[in-house]
Image (cartoon, rainbow, N blue to C red; front, side, top):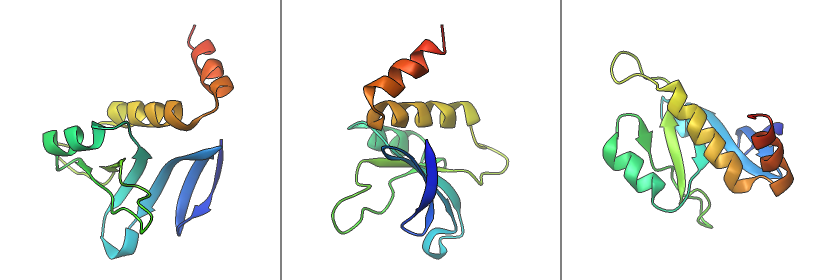
Length: 110
């Protein structure tokens, strides 16, 4: 995995983008993480917990339309669920990583 700036923010890549870290993106006064998500995941998370999750603004070409945003600056309740963030990142990795990288990830768990 590599990290470089993309669209003005730190972005983590494993061939394709796996996550963006945004600190006050376009003046929104929030700290957040954006990850690609499977169809239906974004809507389900945002509907269930709109204080934690959001639908990122898609680009002109539709990039980010299925991505899920997670706020990382929550204080008090509900707070950031770091186990959930870990799962979101793993699912994003599994969506975009080459098969060999996914096999390596799974091999490290046995």
